[in-house]
Length: 228
Length: 83
Image (cartoon, rainbow over all chains, first blue to last red; front, side, top):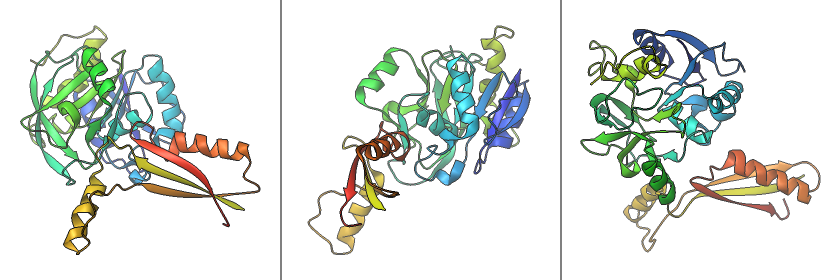
């Protein structure tokens, strides 16, 4: 499948995300924030970084970039979209996902290997995993605290839309230890930690993150689950 | 020219780590008796021509769409007198 990775001014992890897409068995297509053109891709990754310098709020300016107009429309029609870190912030600002990401409660940047539990494996990006899998990926954020009002939190919990939860201590003050959520249809997923930095043993804590990039084929029904 | 001011504040129920950091710094500098600090943003919009109801409605929409995130922030719009 062709997976577009958007580069915004200030994106940091676009090249790593492209590499993870390729290691996951898909073709990576570079997309540019200023082009209202998805180049016919089958899915989109919004990578981490500090798009538009995080001015105003993280993701607030990016959300109105030409490419995002296309992403929002296509996501509504079912296009798989994964937002990682800054990409998660952009998806929340776009109202494709509930809630918002605010500054870490302890006010320090967090950078560490992070254990997660994959709770929802029905999504386009987690179908490779078995529900309840515990994985270790990389976490690095300053504004990674997921917040929403109680009613919204209760609703996404009841609907099984918490995709991943932090294990071994909450790194940033995210309510209910939420590390990632999905939209109702399951094609749009936002995740604060970075699976694209955990796809090769040489440069990461392992390969536990690879499942996010092999899931598209499983979700589309053309491959088997590979991660336990 | 007239000035319209949009004040954006984190909602009361949302944690405000920046405000907490400022609150922590104040007593260290000898400013006591301040029990809470919330930090927000102030936008000063210079408007061409008169501030009509239509202009204010536009500013309201801009505040709702871009200047604030209604999930975590509240905002107020006012015309600054004598600007």
